[in-house]
Length: 406
Image (tube, rainbow, N blue to C red; front, side, top):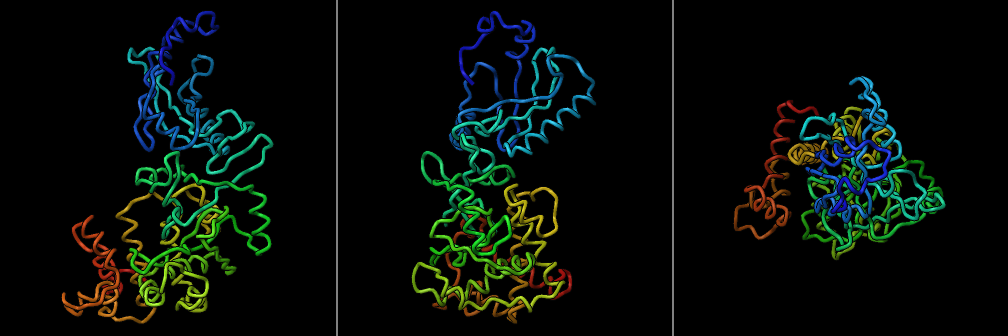
């Protein structure tokens, strides 16, 4: 929003003066991932911050209500607004809900959208962003180059880049299903597709793990699903050509605490190489029953499908609904249930699981060994308790009592 605009700047306009006055007097309230109040002619620092974060230079407030100031019924306006939002979605333009209201009450309220893509009127720009892709002047599509720092377990939006460098994605941003990370580098989409075709990979999503890691991090094996884009050398793709549910179970297995405990015993440096990964005791596809897969897939789906870019992953698992809400408490429960399931699948006893979580809980406070010390320390600092241990053991006990189907 540029400052200094007033009614005199519209001299000679074909728009009626009272309509212009209404535009200038309207509060455009946006209530998506963050609350914004926009006014024509008034600079908004929060909007400027959004421009910087999403690497764009323009935005537009749009409404389909009362086109050309011709009054229509509420039913007609609502239908037109739904059609407008559907078209914005089809173009993969990010938008947030809003409302326009004239303080005097003269201006009819409408449902408004703010788009945060680089071009609200089409893709014919030198660099127009649509979702997490860029379209150049030749209509060529450029896709992000994912780096290890951009992913985490069940999270394809862990880190992002802006003009200041890399940063963690905030919980508020993750709660926005339209938010997608920004990478440092971009590659032509057709090049990525050509490489994937050589691997016989038919999906519009990928699975992979961080090559760079450490046995002293919160977690050592960081694997997840992410959109079918380019990857840097610090991420390793894995092409699990089994049916999607089995590929999903493989990611859940790699993300389990039990397997992570074993990985920590084998890792001697900072690289989780292909050779080390192949030595880890993952469960074979033949291990899983249909009941097992139903338990695992429903939880991995909810943990992973948190933004629209992972819709192909959800569709391949038979789910055609919207992304799941990002809820930290809910996610902790789901992950604990998966951890308890895999501990039981590996044949552990409850005390053996307790040892993996925290040896001191079994051997006493003076026991010299440790497993997930950083995870425990961070959670005590953040939650006042070792939350993962409590939730995993609670899930184990519920399974033992038959209260949680496993």
